[in-house]
Structures are given as structure tokens and as C-alpha cells.
Image 1 (cartoon, rainbow, N blue to C red):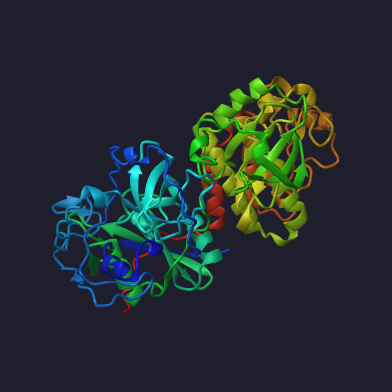
Image 2: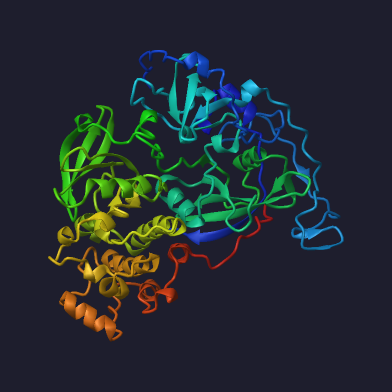
Length: 565
């Protein structure tokens, strides 16, 4: 990323990558750390084999470029030759990729094994235990041992200190992942949200192409809308947006369009920062397997709410890390049954799922330790701030829930209690699915949702409510009910009807009418979720795409860059 190198390093390395693209317009709705002790066995650990295999950059021209700004010297550009093959064709016929109008880039310089083990920090990290290593964004770290996929032993090249680091906080020093403008595998709708919320005019990011693996897209903020340009790849190496100008690397492409719009909506001004720091996979390295922790390590600071299974508190673990603590009602579940379910839940990891960190089951109440979501449950959030949320924001929040549920769907995992009360909200309207799987281990006698029943009838698919036939498709039904909660700012479904009335009417084919102010296209999605035959209901993956398409004005495909200079 931009913070991974000094200015001189940055100027020498920034020109190392280029792009080929096309566009779509769419409307947008340090202080130094204290010395850490050397750990026993660390010297031995330095001898451990490293098999990182980082993705290295392509070779660059010798000219430097400031991140997000113009290069120090003008780069060489390759002009399109009329006899070159057009996009989508190979010499002698259609169907291939673009034949190279530009010479192949020079071969990459071989990198030493030592250099390949050097990573840079892409986020700040504060040590949580004496075994951890603190670092700041941009610090260079030598990876000493990466045998564990989630936590690596590393040495700071600045201080020489050793310790464990979360592997998702660093990237190879000369990799695409280390560039601040590279956002990886995000969808177009998410790119627009990031640029419109965090960027300014001329802000940009590069992302993986959704439709063509191996290609990229450039997204640029243009006033209150976002334009998208497809970056195409040449057969013999190199990239282009418009064939009249090709580049050896992605850095070269970014440098050129930072200096000159050259047919884009505007020149690239500054890379858009990543919206949110990722969660660590565990509270700490030494808890990745031993995640039953002493409750003396938990301090309960502030009650955030009370719900179906107990109370939710803001807490502190080990005097270092803010967490959320769910205290389960005594007698609500068997600790042994819960531990079996929690062992599965802890392995489920996705940016749109609330991360389960640890548990305390030695006595009641059972503690469930998770990441902290600062704005609490979606239900409370809607009732408090709902009128300030417009339809595009509500649809975006629903698409995030669908994304988390699509992951559970891919893992053949059933939520069983999907509702606004079990979605948590963080900063910038970030939504994550919580309490997945808990309904299965809650004692039936203690399963008493808001309206005093033993089952959340109004959220539950008929086949599950009547015959206990739970499936991912019954979760889809519940998702349709959750959509009504969103557009009504937390209103209880089926207003004025008892649970018995609801079941009887559903059996006769009744479905809730379109809530006031809900777009017909969104109501159609709800209605599809309520198909009587579970097999006829959509998948969560398709729901995610449909909801994102409601946000994004996708009337056009990617456009060529304008030929006006």
C-alpha cells in the first residue's frame, strides 16, 4: 500500500504496474512501541522454512511516481498500431484476447529469498499479549515463521523486535496487495459505496474484474457518481483502457492517468482508502486453538442491550481489546451442546459475519466473546435512526446481510433465526450477521421471542414453523421478512395479526402487501423469498446480486475511454 515504503522507495517502485480498461457511468446514491521481550524459542524459529510465494509486481520503468499523483518523469507510452488485432480477437479469427501492440515487458529481476520474506504492514496493530508484535501501517516486517496460516512470527526491520502478527494485516513488500489503490475482489456496488462515502472528486481504486478473472477494473469518483473502466490485458504482457495507449504495468497505467485524464472522466487524484480494518482471526495467537478463556480476563463495561438469549455488554479482554460479551440466560442451554456448536461457529469466517472469538463455559452465565459492533442490533438502529436512512442505504444494508448469508449458504450452515434483532451494525452502516446457529442449541422452553411465543412465528417459514423443516431456504423466507423490517424501520411483521392468524393465512396463500414507500422491485424480491415451495425461493447469492443491482444504475456496460484528449 501507499504507506509501505518511504518516499524514495515509493518513487522508485510506484511505476511498476499498469492497466487496461473500459467504463460504466453509474449514479451514486505514532508513538514508538515499548520494547517487547524476546521469546523462548524465537532464535530457533528463525531457522524455520518459509514458503510464502508472494505475488510479485511486474517490472517497472525506471521513472518514479508519487502515490496518487504525477510521476517525477514522463513515462514512455506505446502507441496503438493500426495492424494490431482488435480487442476480443486473435490473429486469424475472433474469440481470443488482444494481440500485443506493445513489446513484452523486460524480465523481472530475480529476488532473493530474504527479500521475498519481507512484508509491509497495511494496517496498524497493537500487541494484545507479550507474545505479539506491535506495528504501524507502512512498517517493514521480515516473516520468520509462517507455518500457521492466521498468525505469523515476524521481526520488525526498524526495531529488531520479534513477535506474532495477524497475517491479514500485512502484504508482500512488492505486491499488488500492498498498493493502497488496490481493493481486490470487491463488487462494483461496494466500490461505489466506498468512493461516495470516503472519497472525493478524482478518488479512485482498482479491483478485480467480476466478469473476467485475471482482468481488472478502475473505478473513479466523478462528482456524485462513479465511473468504471475495464482494464484489458495484452497477450504478450501489458494493459490498456484505450488501445491508443498501452502500459507495461498497472503502476504505469495509474501514473499516466494521474497525470492526464486522457479520455477518462477526470485525472486520478488520490487512491481511496480501504473502508474498514479487518478483524483478526482470533483474539491472539495463543488462543487460536485454546479459545475457552478465564472469565477473569473479561471486564464488563457497559450493557448494550438485552435480547432473546440474554444480555449483550461492551467489554474489555486482557485490558487491551474491546469486545462484545453475550451473557446467556442461566439454564438456556447445555454447555456441552453449546461448545459443540461453537466449535463449528468459530470456523465460519467472513467479513459479513460477526467473528466469534472465545467462550467462558466454566459456570453460568455462559459468556460468548465476539467482535464489537458499535451501533448494536439492526432492529434498535432502525427504530432509533431509521428515518435518517434512505432507501438506497437500506438496500445496501440488506445486500450486506445477503452477502453474509450467501457465505453460510456456501458452507451448508443454517442460521434458523434470521431477523433484524440478530444483525449487528458498525460504523458507516456496516452490517454483519450474528447469532448464527445459536437457535439450535437453545432449550425449547427458553426460546421465547418478543411476543411471548416459543418460536418467532412471524419470521419463520411455514415448513419450519409447522414441521421443523429448517433449511437455508427457510432462512431465505426469514430474509424476506427482514427486508420488511428494514423498509418499515423496525415494525413488527404482519401488524395486527396474531401468530395463529399468520400461520392460518399463510396456508391460504396470503403474503404481506408491499409496505408504503417500498420500491416495487424490492417488494418483488421479498415476494420471491416467500414462495410456498422452498425450492422455488432464490439463493442468497442471487439475492445479493439482485440487491446490489438495485443500488447501482447498470443501464450501460463498460465504456471505452473518450477519444477527446
